[in-house]
Image 1 (cartoon, rainbow, N blue to C red):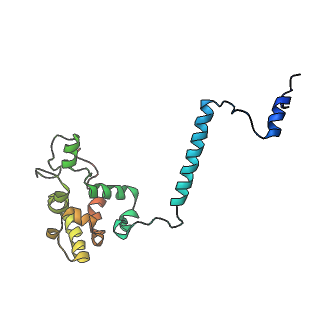
Image 2: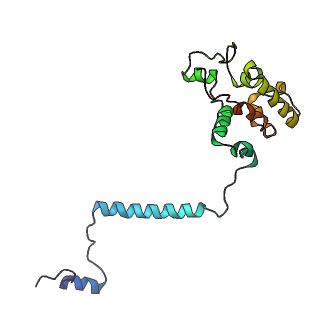
Image 3: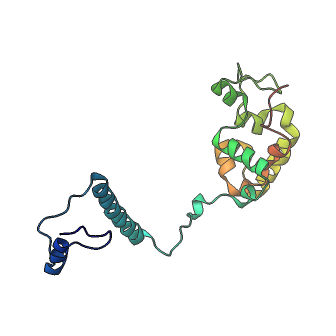
Length: 177
C-alpha cells in the first residue's frame, strides 16, 4: 500500500466513508472540547438575551425624570445644583467630613456650622440673594422658607428658578482664600 497524498483519503478511510460510520471516534483535544462547550453556552446565552429584548424602549417614570430647568442649564451650573441636592456641595460641613478642612465653621460669618440650610436661609453674606430667592419661591409655591427643608426645596420643581439663585452668585464654588 502506497502513501496517500495530502488531501486524498487512503484505501482504509474510503471504506469507512462508504460504510457511513467509523469504528471508533477520533480523539479530540481538550482545547477543542472547551471551545465546543463555550460555543454552545454563548449560543444559549444569545437566545436567552434575544427573548428578553423588546421593541419597547425604556422610559423613566415621571417622578424620576430630572427637572428640565437644571438639566437644560450649563454643565457647571447643573453640576453645582446636583452637588447641593445630594449634599456633596462645597460647604464647611462637607469639607470637614471629607478631611479637607479642619472645622465646619461658615466662611462668611461667625456661625459654627456652614450647611446648606445655613447658606440658603440664614447666612448674612447671602441676604440679598436669599431675599430674591425666597420671594420667587413664595410666588411659585405659596410657601415661605420656614415651611421648606432644603432637601425638599431642591427637589420641588415649582422652586426650580428660586433654588438656582445662590449658584449664580458663586455659592458653593470655593472656600475661603
